[in-house]
Image 1 (cartoon, rainbow, N blue to C red):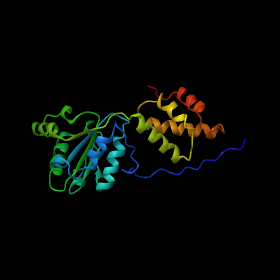
Image 2 (cartoon, helix red, strand yellow):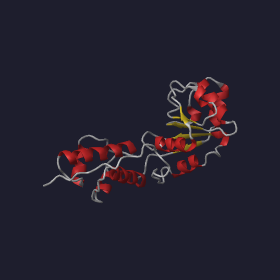
Image 3 (cartoon, one colour):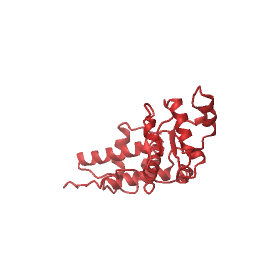
Image 4 (cartoon, rainbow, N blue to C red):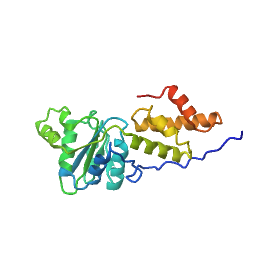
Length: 219
């Protein structure tokens, strides 16, 4: 049987609000981010587990707002002057003094600070009393592990980007067995694509079962 060539359509270089797949697990967070620049105090903290879509949503905001992304481990505050700022994983080692300064900058007219984290700001450790009060007051938008609507949407997008059209039966099969993670969904599609190319096989439920049994995380 002749091999079917699949030409990748290519991913967008930057995440956008338009290609963010919405569902019950993330709609409130999506709407909260989109309310910028009307965030209280110019700040918002996007809180949720790994793989829920925080990075996509945060980078879409950064692109829209023209924000600079600052490294939490070595924050360059000079680059934040007069700019909107994104800091990912802000609960994983961002120095208290830097965070305090950034929150104050965001509170000025026209400021904007988006933080992503896995835990609520009120639980972040700090020895600065003034920062503690600000963390307790930071607006929060929570994003939950992706529901089936979101996972099916991202699976379809990842397949489409690789020009793959699996049978409809593949989707409920994967959704019933895969972990609740968008990066895992992308990895599943990548492995299905590679396995199909290597074995000259179409992407089917049988191939999906083999990929999952080979070691991807399962619920």
